[in-house]
Image (cartoon, rainbow, N blue to C red; front, side):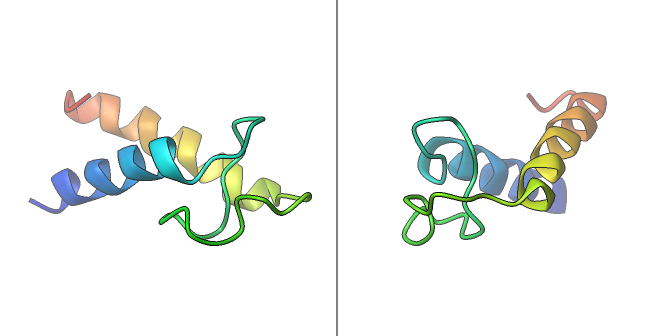
Length: 60
């Protein structure tokens, strides 16, 4: 099911693609961009929405 894939990707990004302040890089693999000083709000807000929508599916 595609929702399981989305959940796995979001969880991976949560663990590997955040900086010391908890902000996400554009690259969810965590290989690039984590150490960039400036982060985009448009890269942060979707993560909140992903987790909110996943709670509706009771997968978390």
